[in-house]
Image (cartoon, rainbow, N blue to C red):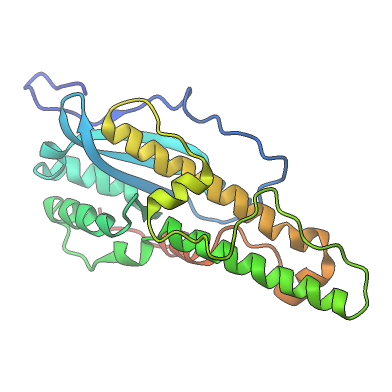
Length: 250
């Protein structure tokens, strides 16, 4: 983390060029027209110069579009730095390994920034675990629709998924989602590694959701019963849309 001439640490924006490549999954992403910037991942942990906060921007398509690391000492003490960081959260859905930690971090940043405002961030927080549960629910609904068509005598192949999960496999903690997604631990400082793991899990969730929703594009009777393909799991999409419409008094 670089420093000003007076010795204070300054916000460090990371180079994204070598960190945005994601694996291909062989199907088209459905999150193409959301009309909002996307999401932000927050992480706390150690960096080269001490305790830090990492902030990653993630597009509605699940790709990483920006990354910053900053000293906790300055983030939670400097009004100017806190305002800059709150600005990076503006109009974005918010999450973390433990989504409940987002409230504490943002509340401290807003207080340091001296922004007298209602807790706008609460309606912008989403949970990767809840998003995965919604994927499982949506798959079950589509499978029931296909079964009903088959039971009615029409020819319809059962649905097959690239990655199939048992109905009882919805984890309650982030670590369970990480294992399901086969996301490995990453190199780098603790705070950077933490943010990257969450980002990669989000990308995986977008891919699994896209595969699920594309059933509507292949089977008109599923689309007729359940509507057009949606860009993201409902709770995540609601957070993105709520955030996208929220301008802050910065």
